[in-house]
Image 1: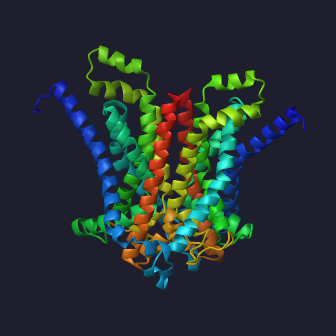
Image 2: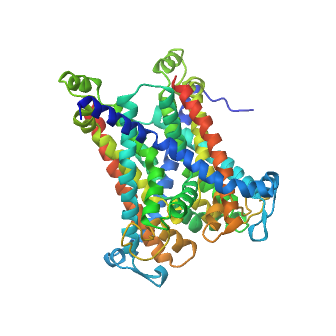
Image 3: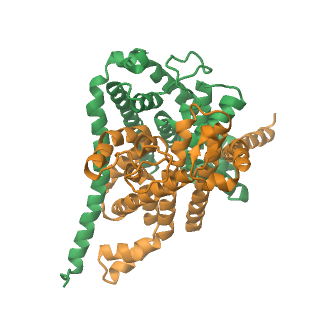
Length: 284
Length: 280
């Protein structure tokens, strides 16, 4: 084979591998949809999405309680993660001495490396009793899931928000300081507004992580398939609905779990698309 | 009446609050690691690591889970690394920004955001059922491979992009072809960065539960081939903790997991720092 032909063949092979991620994504979407959509259509999309009764062995597949729980838990996690995570990102990018930053950055990434089952376990042992004894309720609750998720999404939020803050041109900050701003004023009035796009993307991606988290949530949220009335009530998210029942579900019940997956996938794709578009636009 | 605060004091308050936020994040990390190691290390002995579990995991050790974890993760890396690095090479060396590369990047970004339970569902229906692989090391490994592909790809792309253009120009000027330049010049200098990405992928694979529990299964036996069902350490830990089988052994397994993750992350960081130092 001549060099030119070999080069051409290699290029083609590389192109094929480059298409692997996209084709896997398409394959995942297709398979979840093929498995999940028929049962959704058969029972009626509205009664599936807006039904409040989940009794899969009796043929009731209403996942509204899980949708509500997933949304509430995700937004709740943001209440904790956004102030804490943004502060950490600003700290890393603007305040921290070099050595502190070099220590803190890998430590926060380590937080992302800790398996989600370990988070759930620590949650059961410490957080759940803490809530039960001080605030009442069974302890296994929306609040427990909110706190755990608030911590778990920190690395995602901090990493992307820090990148966004560091991408703000130095001249902006120097200009603000030259006008007599304190560093804190420059951060609040100039740097954060300039980094807004990336910060919003960071928050949205963190929301995606929270919606999708499974094992840690299963262990602390109590898993009752009812719409929670307070943050101290147990609830069941879309992810935990799937993971709890996949082990033994069969027939329409199993298909209904895939249908739950379709809804989850739709949530994630919307969040990711918004975030990715923001990041791409920010780069230009 | 509010107490007037001058800007200097305000600035100091903000700085203190930011320090506090960082310390809170650190404290949470330290707390989790300390709790797991403090309660778990006493259970971790040589026989715990080298024996098979007895009585559903109440007694004995976790040897089959160690083997399963290594097997599943290794398989995932063997599949994901060439694909991820291949993608990175294509994106950096063989093409410029086009509609196609945007699609490739968008696909990878989205894949990175897909929750692990969705990978579990997909792996179950595609590898376990459709392709008839059953609950096996193979199904679990392939599912994990899809999951870690974006991590490997992104890190490899960054590493390859960081190789100075002059290296390539020098190589081309000696008459080397594009592929020769890639294999002889670009990849060797990007290697530490690429390995970092692979190690991070390993870390994700080791700790993963939702994606492997429905694809590799939860058999307590040592897998004898890639077609055997397997139970990884994370899955074992989940089952022990959730079904309240044995607190002591759950902690022990968690401690092994956390130590592994610590080691993996430290290795990745060390490599990354060395790589960056070399790049200047």
